[in-house]
Every structure is written in C-alpha cells, then in structure tokens.
Amino acid sequence: MAFAGFAGQAVHNRWTAKPAAPKSEKPRRGFWESMTSIGVVTHLTDEQYAEMLRERKLKVDVEIAILDDKIAAIKKDQAVQSVEKQQVPEN
Image (cartoon, rainbow, N blue to C red; front, side, top):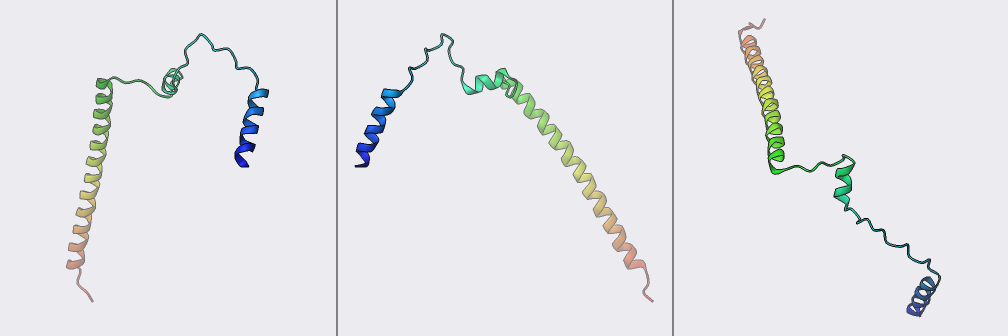
C-alpha cells in the first residue's frame, strides 16, 4: 500500500512541477574553483607549497630552540636551588 502512495505522489509531483529553467550557456564552476575566485583558497604550485612548508618548519624549529633555552634555564635554576638547600645548615 505504501508503494502505491509513493507512486501516486510521484506522478502528482511530476504533473504539477514547474517547467525546468533553461540551461545557461555558461559552464558551471566547481566548488574549489569558486573558492579560489573569492580568495578563500589559493592554488599553489609544488614549489610554492614546498616553500610554505620550509617556512613553517623554520618557525617550528625556532619555537623549539626557544623552549629548549627555557628548559635549560629552569634546570639550571633548580640545580642552583638544590645546591643552596644543601649548603644551608639546619638549626
């Protein structure tokens, strides 16, 4: 019974449907093409992408070096504090 209802509704929809709009002469652009045209996404060559990755790696290397320096300073401070604690006589 459900199939008959579905078929009847499909026939009714076809019968009362508006005529399709005429196809435009302009070819339709894809999603990524439209994104590149409005500046959301840019097309990169392999060389541009490789350069972008090199720049990002350089930034990460700099951040790692800064963190390594901070870690070394903290370890040095902890070592100095532990030596000072050992030298202080207890009353």
